[in-house]
Structures are given as C-alpha cells and as structure tokens.
Amino acid sequence: MKMENTKPKYFLYARKSSEAEDRQIASIDSQIAELTQVAKKNRIQIVDILSESQSAKAPGRPVFNKMIERISRGEAQGIICWKLDRLARNPIDGGQISWLLQRGILEHIQTYEKSYYPSDNVLMMSVEFGMANQFIIDLSLNTKRGLKTKAERGWYPVFAMLGYINNSLKKKGEKELICDPERFHLVRKMFDLMLTDNYSPPQILKIATEEWRLLNRNGKRIARSTIYRIFTDPFYYGVFEYPKGSGNWYQGKHKPMISEKEYDRIQLLLGRKGKPRPKKHIFSFRGLIFCGECGAMVTAEEKIKKQKNGNVHRYIYYHCTKRKNPNCSQKVVREEEIENQIMNILERIEIPPEFCKWAIEQLKTEHEKEQVDRNIILSTQQRSYNTCIQKLDNLIDMRASNLITEEEFLRKKSQLTKEKIKLHELLNDTDSRVDNWIERAEEVFHFAENARTTFQKGTLEAKRQILAALGSNSLLKDGKLSINVEKPIILMEEVAKGVKELNERLEPPQTVENTGTLEEKYSQSPMMLRR
Image 1 (cartoon, rainbow, N blue to C red):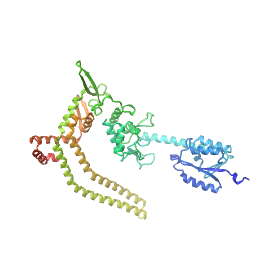
Image 2: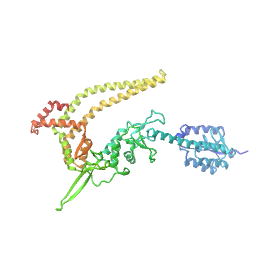
Image 3: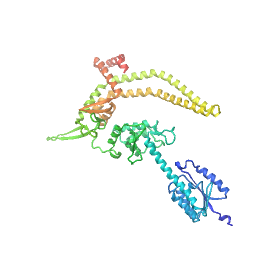
Image 4: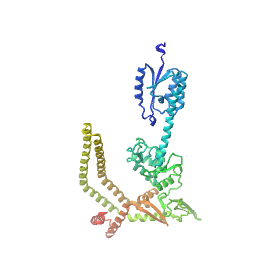
C-alpha cells in the first residue's frame, strides 16, 4: 500500500479558444470550478492550476508546452482536464500525451467523465485524439467551402472593409454587407479628397482622423497602411478577389462606394503598387480633365524652347493619354487656352462686393424670421420624441410585470423604436438644415465674388481648387473645355447677369449714395430676391 505522500500529483489544465471550434465549450472559470469538485470527489491532489485561451489546432501553446516540461521533470504525474480535446486537437500534441502515458511518466489523466491509465488500450485514446484532429480538418474545409460559396453569391466573405458592416439581422453565413452609417460617407469623402489630386494619402489620413475623428470599428486610429489599402482595393468599386492572390474575381452585391472610372483615376494618381508617383512638375489641371472623345485622362507636359538670342520660353501642353484608344484624334492644347476658357466662366458668375454683402445680409434676415417658426416645429418634435421615450419605458415596465406577452412586447417595441429613430432624425434635420444651407450659400457668394481674381493671381493649387469647385466631369474636346457646372454656380450666373445690368444703370457705384441706391434696387428686384 502506497503512503499518502506517494500519491500522484496533478496539474489542472483548462483551455478555451475564441474560435468557432470552442464556442460551445464551457468557459475557463467554469472548467476550473467543475474540475475542482471532481478532484475533491476523487481525492486528487492538484499542485497547480494552468489555463490559457488559445486554439489547439496547431502546436505552440506556451502553457501546454510548459506543463509537458514540468511533467517530464516529475513535478506532477497526472492531468485533470474537461475533455481530451482540451489537451490536443493536433497529432503532435496528442502524440506527446500518448507517449508520456505509455512510458508511465504520466500515470493518469482524469476528465470530467472518464479516466485514462497507461495500462488502458491506447487505441481508444488515439481514436479520441484523432477525432479531435479530424474535427479541426473538417471545420477548416467546411469554413473554406462556406466562404467560397458566399463569394460566388456576390458577398465579400471575410472581414468587412472600412465603411461597411455585416448585417446583424441576418443569421450566420447569410450576413451580407451593408453601408456603415457612421463611416461610409467619411470614407467616401476620403476618396473625394484623393480624386482632387490636392492631397497625399497621409494628408488625407490626418484630416480624417484629426478633423473628422474617423476611427475603425474597434475605436482605434486608422493605420497608415490601411489608407493605401483602401485607395487600391477594387472592392470599393464593386469587385473583389477571393482568396487574395488566387485570381478568382467576383462581382460584389454590396453598394459600391466609387465608380470604376474613379478607381482607375486614383490608381493613376497613386502610381503602381499604391505608391505616390514621382512628379517632375506640378501642373494646374492634370488629373481634373478627361478627353471628350475617348474618355481617357488628359495629362500635361512641359516644353522648353530656346531661341538663338538666348531667350528661353516655357510652354505647357495638355493632351489625351490615349490609354483607352491609342487612335484618339485629339490634339494638344496650350494651358493658356484652357485658362482663358475657365476665366470666361468665372467672369460670367462674378458679383461685386456690395451685392455679396447685401445678399448675405438678406439671407440672414430671412433666417431670423424663420427662426420663430423653426423653434415651434422643434418644440413640437421634441414633445413627440419625449412621448415616444416614455412609451418605451412604460412598455418595459409592462413586460417586467407580465402585463403583456413577449410577442406583444417585441412587436410594440419594434414599432416604437422605428418611431424614435424617425423623430430623432427629424429633430437633427430641422435643427441643422437651415444653418447648413446658410453656410453653403455664403460660400457660393464669396466664391463668385473672389474666384476670378484668385484664379488670375493665385497659385497653381488655387487654380486647381477653383476648377474643381466649378463642377465635375470636365471634358476637353477639339480644344474646347466643357464642365458639368454645379447648380449653385448656374444660379449664380443668372444672378450675376442681373446684378451687372442694375449696376450699369447706376454708374459709378463707388459713392455712398449710389451704394445705397444699389441696395434699394436689389431689394426691389423680384429676380434678386427669388435667387
């Protein structure tokens, strides 16, 4: 009979993985609590409790490896664990356990339901370890097959890209991608900044994180590598490769954030492999104009001509890159010709300072008049919102008191939640819509007042910003520049025409008397007030 101090000592080993293989396994604390009771029941002496949160599908668990070393040194002769698959799900770790048991170094393994001894048929233990390993293999194959099927259905099968989230209302395996209401429009704004060719990716990242306070879904700052990945991933215009590097491309069903044309333009701006391309020269309009014949981007180049008398002349020419059609017939256009055409547009929308000042004052006066009505509307909406919150609170109390069924509770809660969201949106819209419009109107008026002078005397960067502000889809064909002008700019052109007609009747407008007369004429003009 063995003496008490010769009884085997045991390590209590508990493991849980965050991966799918272990989601139904009891937590580490629960394992330890249950196994402690098993140890007391069987009079097992536990010398140390070891635990780790790591998958066992591959070798390399630090706590497990340390435990094997300690057993080999004789610090313990037994292991108590929840099930054998807690010890190993791969043949290497399983083999170590079996070998220690066969050699008698490990005298006993106690699980919650079963015991294993050196004298037992090792075939049964091998089968259990083999089943645990096969489970991992099958799980991996099933997961890959499921992800491939999801990709074939048009849904991005891995972690959602920034700006998108998985639809939480769908069950596992069927969660399609939807726009992230918090981040989608901010990521789109990053693309807009990139498309202007006025900012580098690091500059855009700084603006997004410091000014817009854009964070990822974990609440952390966006890494510099992420911004390049966003700008170079075709996912954002609607297609994706799965797995990465496989050459298998799928048309996504998610809502694209940008067009393919915008994606191609960004790749040209970035250069190969997402790295900013080197620039020998900075040109005012490169990257903002497209060929009106074939749709390719218009680029620019500098020509230096030296005369015999020693004079040097610098010329800048714009021409189609001919990437889409090598036979495009469009010819080169001097930068001065493009600037003259832009100046013509700016002259048509230019307004004098006195009209700009009068117009903004009129807008603010009207805004103040509407403030009373807006406050009444806000008050009414706020009361409706508060009532909805109260109904939700009452509903919860009724359910807690079993006055309504679970089905009635969920149905009414869903209705009230939708109403609450709608009222909240109305409150925000009513409170900010007019202020935002006033701010935008002031920007347009000041742009019309100063754009021509700024374009004449400004830097290359200022000229780029002005062309971008005029509108989009700028096309160059047969030497003529056409711009899809923004609607506020079109309206400003009509206003500017009327202002010039009024001012011409009251020349010179510089005197105090005439300035007062002009403001009176502006106030009496239906067209001015309407616009």
